[in-house]
Image (spheres, rainbow, N blue to C red):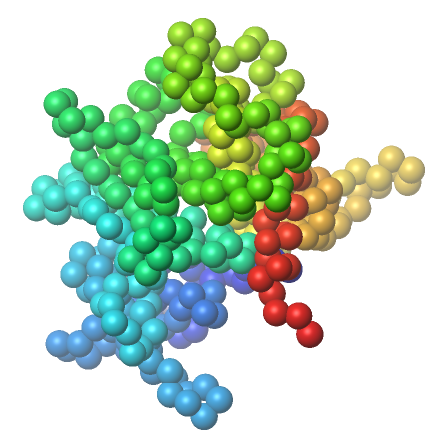
Length: 361
Ligand SMILES: [Zn+2]
Ligand SMILES: [Zn+2]
């Protein structure tokens, strides 16, 4: 069962906050994200000490300290439960390599990537998907590399054996928009990159063990197809003309692995967007043809049909709001029935996994 996100607000003054907030815009108090409670907490500050939260719970003292990246670089808002072997939070500890922070442009870019990573992890946590650091489980764990490419040594964004590499240049909006246009993409964000690459990671965790292979191939195709040849064909010929009848994006047509990763990323977009919409109290209104009225319904994010219907309604509203502000559509996709079937496969795979993990009784 998915935890419904509550609206973040300041415990001190009630001001509404964002998941990304580091301090309250009204009362100025320092904030930190408590992953166990999935909430932003007010921290106390003492000179010479990292901001921290000390509370009594069930007769025990609980201490949470600001991540070292928050203290040193203002690059994080997550808390580290004490005692801890690491001065870094669960998100920052996953960053195996970061760019050279003596260059200001790298600092700006790195902060954006870490912020996108925290949001990614927030949704994975809501879905009960395991996040084990590579430092703990070298074979099956997860780690990130944020690298600045050079002309001689360009960086390719991708995933390999649990190691996700992202080109730091992608954090620059001008560069990203240029790439988006060059590649004819409808959507390109750092968060989207991370959600796509983590899709490859979870393919290895949730599909490649064989139990779902047959069902996977029926929907996505045979992933044993030569990847190099598929890549070459895609960049030479482009996607099939009718790709919108079968896939969630043009890139998804390249190879079944990419189709899975694109679909997985889309599923995370859906869950996060709906969770956020519900936290703001956005009700989904659907016209009721029989009575000629409009009914408001609550989305059940555990039921795929309800999730899909709710998401469709929310994205229409979202695009409407964007148009009111003169922006392009926030959600520039159309989900064809076949892509919807693939999303449902992702939904069931994640739900089944969560149920297996949950202790019975
Ligand atoms: Zn406040
Ligand atoms: Zn951190």
